[in-house]
Image (cartoon, rainbow, N blue to C red; front, side):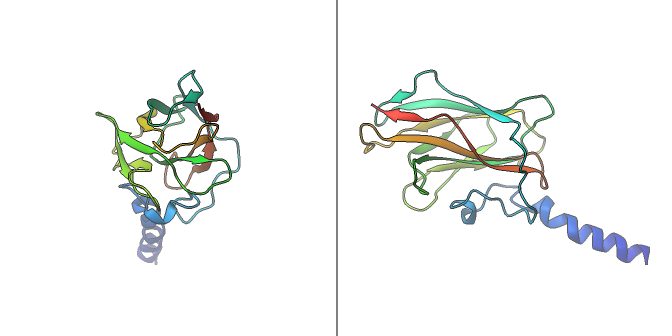
Length: 169
C-alpha cells in the first residue's frame, strides 16, 4: 500500500516538475499562462522591472530590461515575457538573449523572436536581463508595455505582470 502511495505522489509531482523546464510552450503565447496544472497566484507579484528612465522610444530602438525578485527569496525558476500594445493580444517587437542569461527567444503568432522564455534553469536565479527592440513599423504615439509571467517554482507563479508603458516618439 505504501508503495502505491509513493507511485501516486510521484505521478502527481512529475508533470509540474517537468512542466516547461526548458521554456514556455507556444500554447502559452496568447494568455501567458504556463501549463503547470495549478492556478496562478492572486496576490501582488513579488517581481518588478528595471527599465530605462526614458519612456519615449524610436522605431527600431533597442534597450535592456531586467525582471527581478523584490527580495532574495523571490527567485525565478521560469518565465515568459512579451511586449504588447494597448488592447492587443499580439506580441510586438523582438527579444534578444544576452550572454550568460538562461533565456531563449520564442515566436508567438506573427513575427519572429517576439517573446522570451527560460532555458532549463538548474538553480533559481534572482533576475533575468534581455534586450528588446521596438518594431521598425511602430507608429508615432503608439504605446506598449511588457507583460511577464514568472514562476518561482512549478506550483507558484504570477501571470501577466505589467511594466510601465513606453511611447513611440
